[in-house]
Length: 315
Image 1 (cartoon, one colour):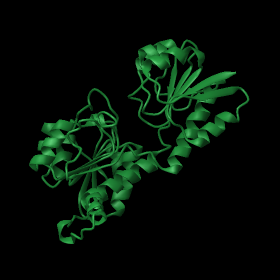
Image 2 (spheres, helix red, strand yellow):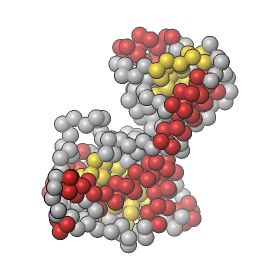
Image 3 (cartoon, rainbow, N blue to C red):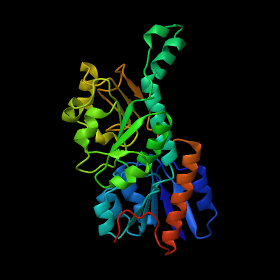
Image 4 (cartoon, rainbow, N blue to C red):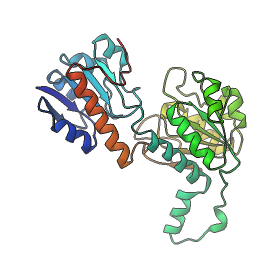
């Protein structure tokens, strides 16, 4: 009997799939700290996580029976991939299961940031009627700059074009031919920053992309620019962004993710020109069902000796 530990919340569809397997038993134990995880890891053949659990080298080494770590979602920056590879632990994710939800959340934040949706709602809820105070801007005819033109970035481009936006993108790993097929011009980052009215981040966290939106990058943006981030909080230097929003270097931001979550003593919280959501990019019923089912099936397959799907640390 294979034993699977689920240390973050997982959609019911994924739990149901595991429940139906005759050779798999799972335990869902959320909110465990590092020491608690280390203590129980020797019992388990696989670990399923989301963004809350951070399997580091110590946790992975403690999993003496561990064969697989399944990330229900895309980002694997919370996993020590080098340690997993060293111990021959397969790490998998679900790269497209929540992509539509993330693209739609991006558009929602673009619209909300442009039309004062959150702050005007609070105004009406407080009994006020301040129509002249909340005059926004349209997406139509504006330029959207997408940083990271993978699957989600391309979904965002399609939706933005439906609003009548011009889309440009920066991604050193994507060919200009891909952009041409989608009527999107691939440009260098130095070209994108001063051209875009909206900038949306859709890249992964690496040493090169960590805090790529810093004071220097912000200084190159338009004063009317709005920054959207539904990818990873570590892409932004939050102190620099707070300063830029406070002094008028850029106009606004729509943020779903933060450098540390939940954000504590974050300089961006409370700024009137920031629309916040609590990491809801993948939080649709459809996406939750898809990521749960997919990662559960992938883990079961690996435990049974079948080829791994969406393995991110080939060895």
